Amino acid sequence: MARCTQTRRSLNRSQLAIGLVAGLGLMAAPGAANDQLRQFLISRNCIACDLSGAVLSRANLDNADLTNATLAGANLRQARLPRAQMTQTDLGRANLSQAVLSEADLSRANLAEANLSGAILTQARLVEVNAANVNLENAEARSSNWYGSDLSGSRLDGATFAQASLSNTDLTNASLTNGQFYRADLIGARLDGADLTGADLREALIRDASLAGVDLTNADLLRARLTRTDLSTARFCNTRMANGDINNEHCGDGDRSSLNE
Image (tube, rainbow, N blue to C red; front, top):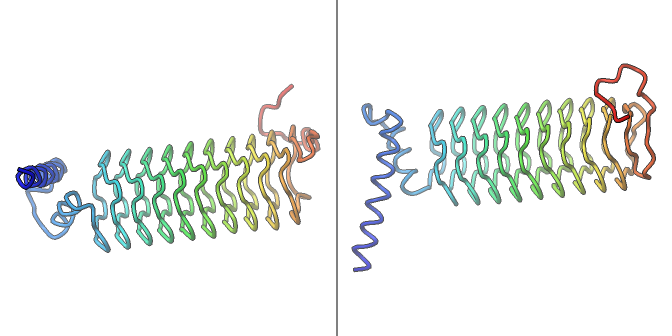
């Protein structure tokens, strides 16, 4: 009886995979790529496979293994990938908006120009990823690890990186407006030219960081640890400093945001 149940489950899963592939319009032209996609949907194992441009939106891929896989330009919108193995995976220009990637490992992955807006990356591991020009607007990345990653030119507006590790990251010219970085680790981070307007940096660890020309208008730095960090060229207006004082040094020189009265 147990054997019949197991066989039935296997068939149901296989039929589901075939149905999904058929829904993508791929059944009419079977080939190696389609076979890989079908097999992946059954086994959730696609090590070093090529799924470039695949449509996997809303797919349930818990614990999937996509190590060294290519998903450049793939549509993974609202896909569920918690605890997935995606080390060295190519996700360049992929759509991962609102995807669930909590506790996933994307170390050394390529996320350049990918869309991760609204994605859930809680406790995810993203060590040394290439995420230049990535869209992380309103993403939930609490307690995630981005050590040594390239996030230059990225958009993190409204994202939550509370207690996340961003040490030695490149955030040059990134937009972090209204981002949540409470108790975040920014040791050695490069934030030159970044926009931190309205950012919450309370109790953040900002040691040996580079903040040349950074905009801290309306930002909150209360109890932030700013050891060996040069803020001489930073822009302050309605900025709460580490000691609780309000810095309005640049409020009169072309302020770009609406300030509190």
